[in-house]
Each structure stands twice: as C-alpha cells, then as structure tokens.
Image 1 (tube, rainbow, N blue to C red):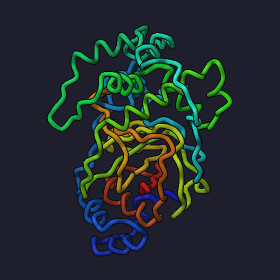
Image 2 (cartoon, helix red, strand yellow):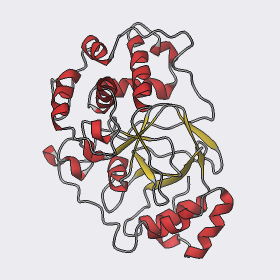
Image 3 (cartoon, rainbow, N blue to C red):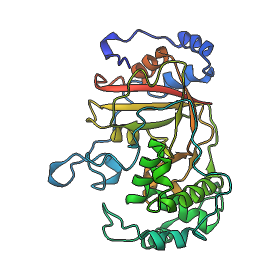
Image 4 (cartoon, helix red, strand yellow):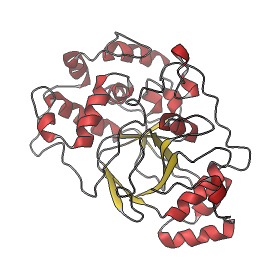
Length: 319
C-alpha cells in the first residue's frame, strides 16, 4: 500500500473529481470529499492521558480505552481478506440457548475496563436505565436490544467471537468450548436486522481504524474483499483515527473510508459506549477497493493538517 506524504500530493481540483466517476464512484463524492473538511476544520479532539501517562485511544471515552487495548473497537485484524464467504451457521442449525438471557447466564462473561467484575446481565440492567429512544429509533424487542448491547461490552465475548470468525476457524467454533458462540452469532445477526438502518445521504461516509498496516497484496485497487467477522465502523473520523493509533498530529495504522455505505446498522443507542457512534456490519460483507487516486484525494482534503506518513488510507465501496 502506497501512502502519500503531504508534500507529494497532486493538486486536485473539484472538477478533476469527476474523473473518479469512471471508477464506479458516485458523483457526490467529488463534492463530499472536498467539503468534508475545509482548511482548519480537521482539528482532532485532544487525546487525554490515561493511567500511568498512557495515551487514551479516544478523547470522548476518558480513561476507558488505553493505547494498548487493540482488541476492543475497530481493532479486529482485517489482515488477509478474500473474495469468498464463510458459512458460520450451517443448515439445520439448532440454537442451544433459548434466548440471550440464558446465553449470558450460561457463559458467565465477566467484564473488564471501567466495569471490572460485572456480568453482562449486570451491565444490561444498568444500561437500560439510561437508554433514551427518539422518534427515529426503531422499537426493537428487548432480546434484540440486549444482544446488541452485549456485543459492545468490554469482555471476552467480542474478542473470542471476532478472532474465531476472522480466522474462519470452524473447527474451533464447533468445539464444545466455543459451540455456544454460534448461538450468539445467530442472535446478533437476527438483532441487526431490526436495528437502525443507515439513512443514506450524499455526504455520508463511514470510517474504521485499525492499528495494523495492510499489505498492498491484500487490498489491490478494483479487487473485491470480504470482511468475515462482524465489523464496527463509525460516523466519526476522529473516533476511527483514535483506534488506528499514533498521535493526533501523526496518526498511524490503517484508516478505512467506506463510501456508498448501505447495510451497516446503527447500534449506538444500545451500546455500552453510545458516544462512539457505532455502525455495525454483519459478517461476510464485501467491498470494492477503490483506485489510489481517490486515496490521495482523501489525504489532501480530509487530513491536510496532520502528518500522514505513518497512516495507510484505503477507500472501500460497499457492494
């Protein structure tokens, strides 16, 4: 993956963005990416120090997530995507747990971070008291709401689930130790179908940051790639960059910019951390990798005030 430094960026004008349409990008991106951040508007939220002087990954979360917490949000390792999909729920699958409450009681997940020692049931009991639904929030079932919340809680559930799914490790998933995770995949997929649909707007992009560099062989321009696990994104570039690592002035890792988002579902209302503005993709979502010309376009206009020498940017279009 080639990362452009600010000094080497071509001077792209608004009219030149029309050339990107030929690559399959909708016309609105020319205007969107030029105006998304005008000079001086890309200032990132200062990142406070966590315990022991460790930089906190995300200013809005106080000291909850430190820089070393690479497993929580946006940190699933999308290292070697392929164009194929994986069947996680086989034909004839029978759910062992009657509902999400039974699953949480049986698995006994214990939280960490800012709520050490609490169970998922404890966290949900607390979260229900502060959830506020506006007129645009779908009225989903209590079971679906609790399932979406459980996925966002900082514990081994999301860590083990996404690790296994990223690896496509069906042998482990079907083992006696992890068989119950198939129940949660079923519960979460069902819950996502009732969550907030993305109200598509011409200026809307979603962002995802990871701490890993991405090989150019895995994300070749115009190739089709698959994210095999449930994948978190956000409307906020600042949140995504926080989890990509580095510093506010010199972000590192990889930033995915998703244009033409369609199927991501908003779950922030039910999240343990609603300020992260999380939009979740289901497993086996596929994207087209857009040409490098669009990458340089984003670099110049969205990150013009920071040093991007350590940051990879990939533009993906959902298909």
